[in-house]
Structures are given as C-alpha cells and as structure tokens.
Length: 454
Image (tube, rainbow, N blue to C red):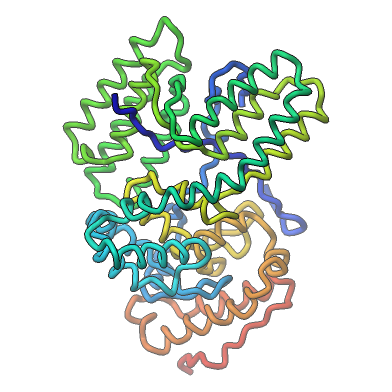
C-alpha cells in the first residue's frame, strides 16, 4: 500500500513580548502523554513566522504606492519586492509552471534575494537548465537526497549524545524518550508512523493556510477559507474514543466544501484533510522530520522531570540540531515537500516591502506617515519592538541604507512620482526628522538633493 505523505508544520517558541526600553511611553498546556502533538489551549499564543502580512496598518496606503518602484530597504539596502507582484504570481499560479518559465520571472527579482533565498534561486536556476519542463518542487525533490545525507551527518552525533544522556532518565521517562526517538528515526528515514489526530493542530495549520490564501488569492478563495475556518470550529477540543465519529463528520463536511469550491486543487488543503482522516483512523503516514516538532515533543517528554540539570542538558543538546536558518541543507529539506506556490512564496517573502514603524507601536509609535519607513518583511519581523538606537547598533549598515532609502524617495519626488500619486512630499522631511529623533539625534540624513518648490 502506498503510504501517504504530509508536510508537518510544527510549533515554535518565540518571545512575543517586545522590549521597548527607555522609549516605552504607554501601554502549553504541556501534555505528558505519548501524543506527539500535545493540545494547546490558546492558539493565539503560538506565533508563526511565515507568512507575515502588514495589510491592516492604518494610514499607510500612500507609502504602499511607492513600493511598486523598488524602494531599497532602509536597513539592508536591497531593492524590495512589491507584495502586489507576489500576489499576482500566486493568483495566476505562475509557480506551478515549468521551471524555465518560473526562473524567467524570478530573474526580475534576483537582486532582491539574499542568504538562503539567493542560494535556492541559483540552485533552481541551474537545475532548470537540465530539466526545464519540471516544476520547481520537482527540481527540489530531485536533489533532496543529497541534502538529506548532508544534514543527517550533522544530526547523527547530536542524536547519539541525547541517547547517551537518556540512560540517566528514570524508567518512565526513558520509555517515553525511546518512543520519541523510535518515531524520530522513522521520520528521518521516511518510514510511516502513527500520529494521533489533534483538532488544535488542525485548526492551527488551517489558519496558516488561510494566511497564505488571504495574502495572495482572489475574493472567492478567501470566502471559501472563511467558511472552512468557521466549520472547523465545530471540532471537539480533544479527540477521545467517544467523539471520533463527530470529528470524522466535521472533516468529511470540510472535504465536501473543498471539493465544491475554487480551492479544490489546493494541495495544502487537500493534504491537511486527507491526512487528518488517516490520523483519525490511526493509519500510518510518512511525516518529514521537523526540528521544531522534535524540540516540542522532547520538552513534553521531560516536562515534569525532577532532575532539572539533566533536563536542561538534554534540551541544550537538542537545540544544537541544525536549523533552516543555519543550514542550507535543512532549509532545502524543510521546503522540498511543499507545493510549488509555497516554495515561490518562501523564496520571495523575506524581500517583500513592508511598512516599518520607526518608533514601534508597542512603544507608543503612531500609525502615521511620519513614523513609517520601508523595510523587508524579514528585518521588520526580526526587529519586533527593539528600540531604534539599539537596532542601529545591531544593524550597522542601516545608517547608510537609511540614506539610500531617503535618496530613492527624493529621486521619486524629483521625477514627479509623488505628485502623480498625490503623495505629500512632507513625508520625506518627516522621515528625516523621525529617524533623527529616534536615533537619539545621532543619525542625520542628507536632504541636499531634495528640490522642493519655494
């Protein structure tokens, strides 16, 4: 029998409380059972780093109009991608086309790619020369074994060290750890495992798919997602013997809605519903190994361990497993099982233009043009609520790139773009003043090229 595959999005731990320092002016549930996905009572407490959208920021429409002109990021200086460009590509299903056509489109944005996204773009470009008719997911699948072997070489000694440490665990914890490792090795070797169904996990994953749909699809698709999200609320909070039938009925109705909708061919939704039914039936499925899921499960296993020193040492050891931010091999494996449109989304997302609050909202920053700059979603997300002077120290190149951003604004004004789009040129001087004040009067930008009428 052919074993189904699913793409496993796991939970991650982030500090979601911003630190404002002197600028501030205002204002899991851990389950120790063998369930690899303990229930989470509050889904809002689970941050998800991809994708990040800024569509709800008030009074930012004028700045967003300028994103179409390839403004440089005020922190990194790279030309930012207009989010509307990505939306059009997703809506037109461009990433599902033969890779030769996709690369031709991506070539227009190549100067915006950095880090692993640039490596991925170059890898896909080289592979497309050999297999121009394959889609980008198929190209990654072709090289996946190479990167898997490389990653396993880095992971293996860490798992051996964890196993050695586990010998000091009490029998109950040792049994649960061995069970976790048994499933982990199956995932690493692409062998099927049984994973209990979790309605919390299902709704969490469905909400992430909804974010994708809302950021790049049409109104009809968004309407279907709202209907699916509403229907998913009928799930019982937990899955026990007495409500499995009810859980299956909800899934089957979700399946019915999907099959009758414009999203019937959406691979992520199809996979989520199909594999959820398999999990409810306790059918074995192939699940890719996920570092985040492993850390989450290990923490669950060790949650009530009295030996805090041993617990901390095991968690610390597990944290040395390569991440997709540190290892290109881990990055490739993380996305190789995803549909082509999501691979394209991941490739372009870090370089998308976003509205940056120079003084963070959590520190009293207002939703006004004078407090806005343009930054890539990656750096906007990484900054969170770090005070501007501290952020400048962490991003020393930002000082020259703020000037680069300003020069681009001035150039657009001098070319008549501001007038054409009915944008008040006062934004330019306001940006200069805000950066000056929020930097502690240390970052003074040059406006000599600005030719305002007398």
